[in-house]
Length: 105
Length: 225
Image 1 (cartoon, rainbow over the protein chains, first blue to last red):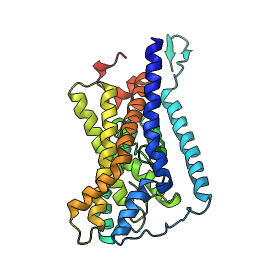
Image 2 (cartoon, rainbow over the protein chains, first blue to last red):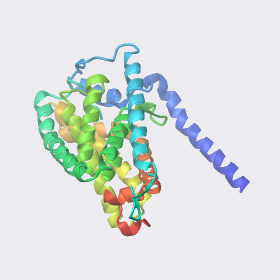
Image 3 (cartoon, chains in turn yellow, red):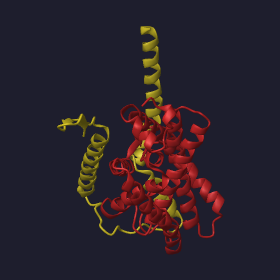
Image 4 (cartoon, helix red, strand yellow):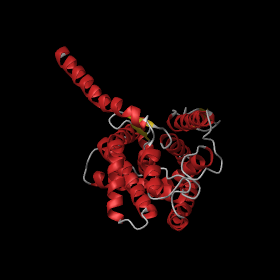
């Protein structure tokens, strides 16, 4: 069993190295740009279509980083809130009404 | 997948907006209709909205390509709340991203709704339903739905971009060129999206199987309630 686990670990490590090697080679060239820029905008430029500045341009310095952080925090809170609302176990309180059997509320 | 402001000519931008509009309108109608009779529906839509919003602007580095991209998240919502409401939720997420996050654009909002919201949601939903009809298990069906939804989204983006910017170039060769450019990044990312979709549906199955029955994701006989 332990031999199998170590064999799997070696395979995963080798796979990770194989994945990372081309990345290291490409990192200097693409610097982890998004496909929205490296594919969509690049091809659009080749065909004479330039991007326009957004209506509210938050792509200035660290402002975009802040907006993404804020969006992630708010989105995460909302997701967590609704997840809890959906998955929490509702306690069924039994209220005894005189003259009747207990009624679950 | 987020086509930026100004990339599509006005005519194409208007066309895609016209295609998106009925889906958004019908999504609003369905949301009102379904949430009126079911108290647990609004929290689920809220959860889906937050999930799509976060997932669709989360840049994931793909080591094999040396680039970043993002999943769409519309397969999850397509399965859980239906493809039409999923398209509406995606539209809201895309609008916020276009307005405040320099992600996408207002003129290209319709095109982005069609690729991510409409095509992504319907591809995920139909894949899931088709595989379930073939008696494939829940997790694997959800996984495949995630993969297909992601790839279909980027396939549609390729169609939109090729038709919009081609000028006098032949459509098919440009479409193929864009699609091939997406492959190194989206091939592994589609698999990641599949895993995320399977994880989310599987987790809900563990926590609230009754909810999955109510949403018609599962049949009552498939769950020991």
